Length: 240
Image 1 (cartoon, rainbow, N blue to C red):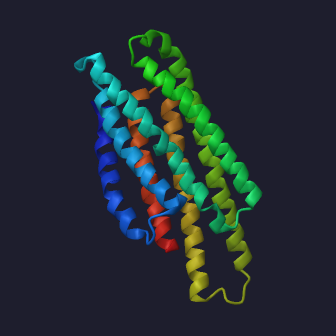
Image 2 (image 1 turned 90 degrees about the vertical axis):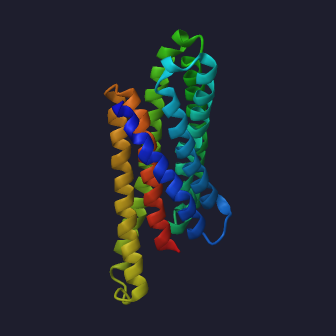
Image 3 (image 1 turned 180 degrees about the vertical axis):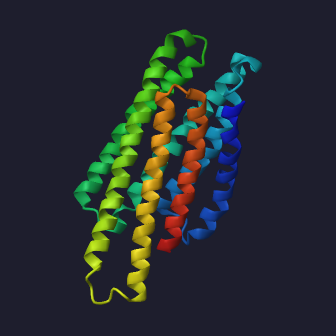
């Protein structure tokens, strides 16, 4: 099945990222580190669990329940831990504390409402009373994809805005030709590029959802989030 082709590169990327994260960080603590680990494991389990759901006719109900629950459980860190990664380094670009608190409140509200509603309808639509949950699930799926897209757009927008501010501010400094200044400029350009790539990837997920290509969208989503983590490591390597 063509929709299944994204699971293999998703799991490959997730396995590849684990040692990279381990050897890149000097301290194995803090929100940034654990968000990276949670997001990576989320991709790995999500891709594996959803792969089992691609062929429901081959498995009895009891064996379908476990991958459904695993997929829902893994989807939560895959999506929200990725947002927490972006949130955790907002202070590094001097984002105001009030703004950071508002962002955290947004993440918590969206996480609780979207994950809870989607998990209930997902498990229900794969259970014995599936007919009762199919329409609510279809509605909830579009809502959560849209909400998380807007969330990522806001986070990426903050990075682009602050990176451009840094570039404009330091452009006229006397030490703009110094090694430190060149490194900062390069990092800001990389940050802008990575943020744009993330938004473009999220747009493709949104387009697939509204085109009604459900299986392609959910399998492609795992691949997108694994690529996002690779972009994050590129940023991390410039920070250390």
